[in-house]
Image (tube, one colour):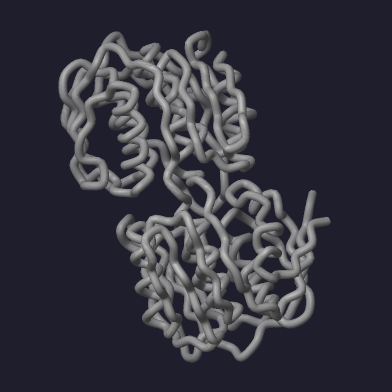
Length: 415
């Protein structure tokens, strides 16, 4: 297993470009199953999760070829609708093949997925939606068996705006007879990108980005080409890293509207933010005020940026309060930040962060993807050296993270 050795104290300075979005690419790769042909996807990042999803597609019989940041996926000869336990446990998003396999073959068998242990992410909303479309579902021995003679359009109201459930229902509904309406749908930009890709395939979908999505079923789809949107979580991590090191960085290939909740908080605590078309400049003195944050579904503050923001607030002037409403086990980074000298108290889903004057290097462990990013940012601002174990978690969502930050003046060594 790899680890990072980080020597802190360097200001981040320069310009950095954001990759394509991991959370947009994964459902788009799954949706290529519906095309029954060749799809070309541009701006695909080099990430472990992308490799895992590619392996899932190849297990089903698809052919996947990478040419730089482009993936060429041919799903014409898919012969299987079953994904085994080994692949499913590697990544939560592997369950996104459920909807498209059901839509194309009217049957699918998968085991329960794995992924970061940040809280319960049950499949009940996914399955509720598929049942409403006419699927018969049997859960036995850790596997989910789904079959349908026909999928029929209907109205589905999600109890909570689940991103994964919205995506799976959307992909299944594309091949259903009639019209499907999804109410209380998740509004994330990644769902808008999925809608755009599906419409390129020949689907008829309206409303992604709002709480009501309307899908008119179709009988056939065709090949398509698509460019993935920029990764707003990667961009946000750069912005927070610049703030915590007192740096001056311009982040390019971003959609600023996707980061409004983060930018508002950075401005609120005293960080200078300047937006220019598809670029954001952050200039920080390293001194900032405390604030309160509550994670919420989009367009609220993203849970995937909460750990990084907590790392920043450990050095704020005053006491900050973070309330996590999405995942009940998303404070695993707290004990590791304390090793670096942070003063954090957790009461249920609320974390109280008393700002300290400095952090000090120590040996810590990344327990999940975004926790690892938070520890890396804290280490950049800490005195002396920090060792981060569990780098494989970070690699799931950040492409060559150490190299990118080193181009901005960081001192990170992978061993």
